[in-house]
Image (cartoon, rainbow, N blue to C red; front, side, top):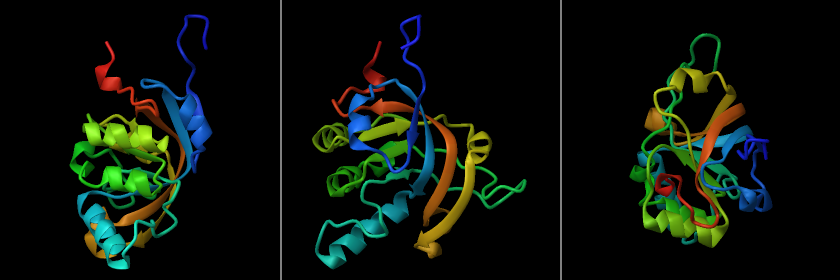
Length: 185
């Protein structure tokens, strides 16, 4: 805690540690370093269908304990893996998020408010929802050091990708206690 009573930026390594997640509070500023995974609407539908096809809620592709960033990155530019990578409106993934949190996802990253079902899933699973700034996709792309497409390449920008980030800026949107940054005064 700083002298002015504000919390310092929390530096987090990916994959995330659930005990460390329990210490975070809605509104905390954080940076993420390590691997996160991008997936959007069509990718979520494909992932859920794949889980249904296997008849279980076990996450494929090593996603258990990982963070999913709701983003559709642009092609490489300026010597970087992506020219831009910005957050998608998270509520569009609310149809899938509770099931994925229950299956082991530690965090999701996007922009905007989430449903009550997502808030309950964060509480139930000691997981969090992070928000990052929309309109800053070119800046966020500077935090990406590498990327690899893992699945659903035919979906283009909505494919499942493993993305290495360094000092990627986020805020805690929903903490493990269910506090929501959008409800704070």
